[in-house]
Amino acid sequence: MIGIFDSGIGGLTTVRALMDTMPGYDIIYYGDTARTPYGTKSRQTVIGYALENTEFLLQKGAKIIVIACNTASSHAVDEIKKRYDVPIFEVITPAVHAAIKASKTGKIGVIGTRATISSRIYEQKIMELKPDAKVYSEPCPLLVSLVEEGWTKRPETTMIVKKYLQPLKTKQIDTLILGCTHYPLLKDTISKKIGGQTAIIDSGSAVSGAISSFLSENRELAESLPQNGKIDFYVSDVTEQFEKTAGAIVKKQIKLICVKK
Ligand code: DGL
Image (tube, rainbow, N blue to C red):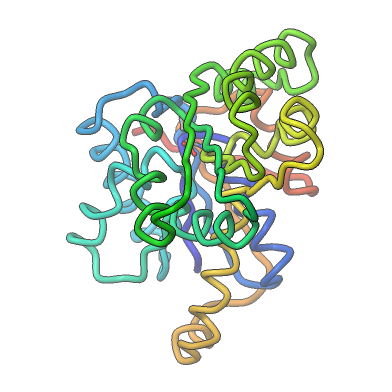
């Protein structure tokens, strides 16, 4: 099984992308809804949560781990790789590759949680591959909670998105990385506010290409993974809102299994 985790609902954008690009593979998802958001927590706390989530997925039979959360990817990927000897995917590197490919002017914007933006991981990775790039980053701390709350179409959310994107608009970026897997759920609003000509890179989806290439190069592992199209959804707290929004993202009715930590 492919094990995927996020602090909440955002990682379902990765689940959806995997369902589209590699249909059939069994998936086990864990949304840490009781402890969301991660983006306002300290590095040590996020590392602790990420290790627990990985352990949970491995115990449930995952053979590959996908950290479908930029915050956990930026803080915890090295620790997870140190402790577990299974393929681990994070969402940042694939998004960086996609952004560099998409950008013509090299002016790239990044939005994410406070934790992701202050880690400066996107700048570092972009500059390693394209030293002449100009990277402009903005933390958008309120957006995760608005998405978890299901407020994706509210006028208040549109106003907040506009305010967050204003500094990036003045920099005339031609590519914007959604450096948080919750943000694709606000993609239409973000695209409208930043301007339709700006390429939008979705970190949650970009990772599906990396997983798919990895599995075509590692046939033995790929063939050992069950492919019955089964998806198990685990959460650390059930809320009515999560159930509704989650079903809409993966476009099927889902049954949440709550596990208390
Ligand atoms: N989806 C997570 C991310 O990509 C949200 C983090 C949070 O819970 O604040 O960063």
